[in-house]
Length: 500
Image 1 (cartoon, rainbow, N blue to C red):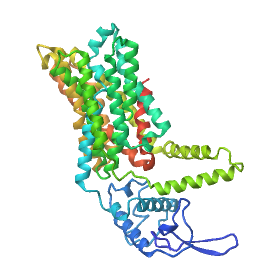
Image 2: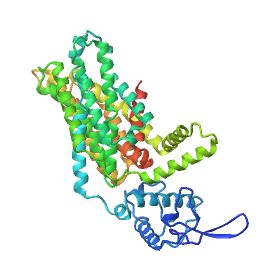
Image 3: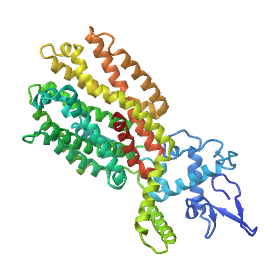
């Protein structure tokens, strides 16, 4: 008896004997169905059938909806009595059955159908936003005081741009190392965020060392970027681990907090314009250290990305046995097994076409986003927006404008996440990208009207980042939950590679 479709399933052996097969939870495995060797568990069958009946006709954002392809009306009907006639129905059925088995053993059927207490997830999100805002403030700290640094190091405009690009290059290196070492899925996200924020603070304040020349500053900015690769992707993973139905909104607030943190050096320049460059770096390093402490003491991972360690251990043992059978002499079996498991984890990512589509979309989006964030202060100064906001000190006014534009990402990301969770992520991404392109075309049309430039700048700042979080939400939903950390890290690192 097929437990979901309600149809009799049997197979024939090589000798022609007919064998009934079934799929209660104690007989489910990766290869699909197998011969019954023990009793039939009617209680598990009833619970699983009721679960699929409740979810098959409801368009929701539960973990069942994340499974691709999603069960359709033809695959599971409300009466649970007929089978789909689609050619791939058996493969879909086996995949969903294995998914159910994994989740049943990991968190229990009751927690699959019952959401986590809202208060827990909201507190976790608030802590995550706090840690991300302060933890990411070192990203653009050097860019905020770039005019002073150019005088200090006696460098050209081109050389000065290297100080900002060095962080992106460091982020790329850090992301690659994280993926190679599988840190994002082996180590607790809160631990990585703690280490990343603390190390970023050290590298950032390292520019105050005596006799730190331009070359040394470049190396320190690269180090800061490498540390950031442990903060930004892990913040998105923590958000995904706490939210399912409102995941787009949660990750949207995280990405918005990245923009808010990245804009904080500009805010420091506004209210402390007379501060020396090293005081700005010190303030940013202190904030990053505070974020590290909060991550260490309070931040925890949610339940929705937890992996069944017992099942994973059994799979590793099976791999080891297979390698030992292949290598009769037993030499190098341990390393071969480890390599096989690593290759399998990477395969879960690279062979997922949905992951690559979301990553390519994210890469194209980042060209525009970081161009806006990096140069808007200078643009605001040249187009007299700085003088409009602060007549006595146009430089301070330009910093204020840059802060408003970059920090407006919180509005764009949060609002887009709220809509995407209800209308769909690809729809929001296409709309946001189209409107953002319009903003980039309109921003420079009227140099003689700083008010116009300011309004279009805010409009562009909101729209340019609106779809950013939804690419990350897509990735967390389409890849296996055991490799979400590595997948998001690859997604964030790839744009840095393309920028070079």
